[in-house]
Length: 391
Ligand SMILES: Cc1ncc(COP(=O)(O)O)c(C=O)c1O
Image (cartoon, rainbow, N blue to C red; front, side, top):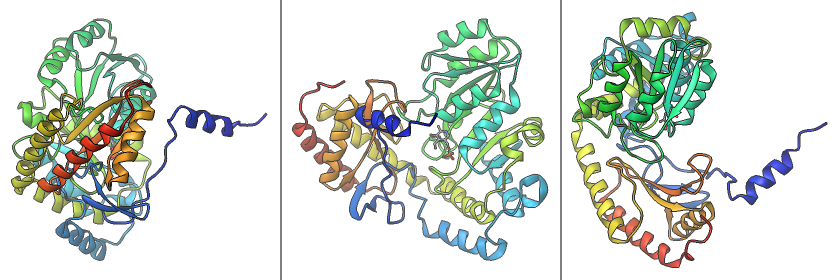
């Protein structure tokens, strides 16, 4: 008996689903060098342009000089250092919640929160378009797991009727592949009627959304009672790395005691926490980044609509263009690349079959001229594509 990996890989290629990693040979930013070629990129999640900000870089350097490089141990042994603690306090203040807990990645924060809160005999209900880490967390938890129709409170209510035990309703705040917002006011009200808790992963909302960048809960004016479990990631608009869960004192103590992805891993390098403290300050105080980003979003949407491209219902920097078939999306992306633009084609299984898309993402670091360049190239490439025949 042997593992037939070659056939698996060949099948993946035949379905136009084979993944390759572009090699980035420059810092993150609008103008990058990828696979040896300068390109104008519209595919990072560095929404506020902080990943390569000189002050954030300096904070990391100073942090490394003061605290060394490695976290050295898990938080519960001797890896919980002063910068980690200061960042948790700053994130609690930022979110207006009693406490926040720092994680090394968003994937781990999601696994940690769900598996610590529900298990056998409980129920976890998730939006069917949730991020993979949330879906994996639901499956791993051992709780009864069911997915409701995308952003549909009625579909959620039908599942809540059948729920057993402690029930956790889990949703992305901003859906990562569509860019739309969870209808949190309605979803939270529905959950609350049945005594269920709501957990929101706002990986893509912190930074771009809310008057001070406080994400979807700030956008909708929701508090701890509506969303007891709030997750943010730090590798996107914050421009650094890691993630946090913000909530009540009891929630955070529960995670520290019971969340295996928190307990059994080395803390992130403390210098990264120093860098995030700086990027949090910039995110809060430099409101012009959000304002500029919103202007770019409006311009891109107007321009893409004029070209007759299929936009999705997104008010966020995630502006996918629906293409349909995987081969066609790949070809579109390739044509753009020939013109010096990098836009990722997102295919199943990351998105549902037949909904392959170009995932355009905008950043405050982009200029208006760069967005115009993208629009011109999109128009040219679309004209070159064969009519849709492979969706
Ligand atoms: C909605 C969402 N949640 C969680 C994650 C995972 O976060 P991290 O990259 O920090 O593991 C991502 C993407 O990376 C995401 O898009």
